[in-house]
Amino acid sequence: MVIYIVAFTLSILLFWMICPGKYNYSKSSINNLIFKINRKSIGVFMASIPLTIVSGCRYYVGTDYLSTYYTGFYRIIDGIKTDGFELGYFFLNKFLNLFTDNVFILFFITAILFVGFTFGAINVLSDDVILSIVLLLVTRYYFISMNGVRQFIALSILLYSVKFVLEKNIRKFILFVALAMSFHFMSILFIPVYFLDKIKLEKISIIKWIGIDFLVFTIGVKFILEILKNTKYGVLIRRYEVPGIKFTVLTICLNLVIFIIGYKNYNKRYKDIKYRIFINIELIALLISLALQSLPLMERVYWIYSFPLVITLPYMLDEGTKIRKFVVKSLIVLVLAIYMVYDIVVLGDHEVLPYQSIWGKTAVHDSGLRWYR
Image 1 (cartoon, rainbow, N blue to C red):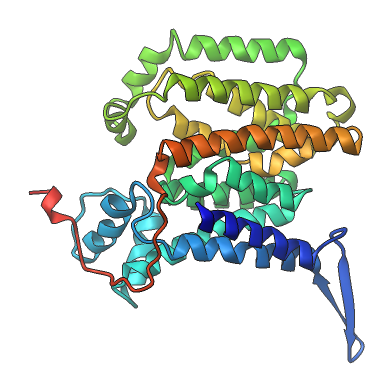
Image 2: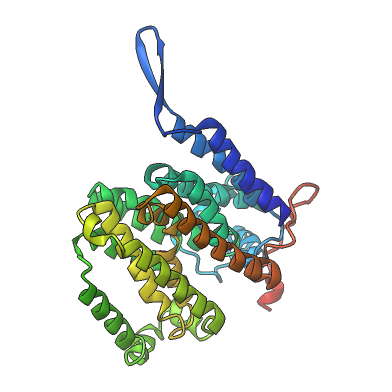
């Protein structure tokens, strides 16, 4: 765990050293030409480097590292079509195959994609970069990205697409959603985000949404299973169980607290489109958390609307005195950190510990054929 703590500490320090104050521009003049150097962008880029290196240079780290991604790379080389990878991920592998048969390159490129899009979104959308970096750690999503590689590349692309929601640029938004879908098809469920600014959350409407959520995922769950049974995810549903009750209760409570605190000043802030979109995203995350016990793999749907927390939380809680904001944010981070330690360190979830690097290791051509005989 030490290497992860060091990497995140270094990431925060790099940003703080480059951009210790307001996120402004520093200017320099050369031959009467004015160049604007965005200190925030430089700081965010430098902060991304340690996390990219740690993730990209891992070896046998992540539950699906060997069975899906390591051997999957060589199955694609050998022309074995058993994985059903989405087109974007498949062609990424095929493109890399043109230059190398070293699977370690694949893991470094996927790390660049996940961290790159995530920090790109933090740069353009977060009002508190340091808090966003901390949240990436304590929400466990950095760790999970080393297991669910394809989905978290997709989630990072979706996170960046929120920029186009705020700009009301539907073409670029759809383009980025399509790109995300090419890595994980469930990304299609993010499309409603574009229209969230039109939804006004009166207290009575919140109760209605919770009621609808309850009906759909209790009475309607049989119909959902029937619709999905012949799809790829219908097959997966039969192989997985619902999350544990402790995880479910904690997730619901945490999302409820975040939503209540974020909603507290709704009447004052509802005209702010960015706030309205962010609080609506959090409401959807809350509604999905209430359904975690209804269907297997609902946690993966939950990730789609929970991952944006790294940018939405700082903005939703940006009200009140400095002391109040600091206390509230600190308490939420503390709760998340405690659960992160319990889940990642104690339970060994996602198998990211112990950390090993590729240094001194050799990439062996292994298609995992022993699993298909």
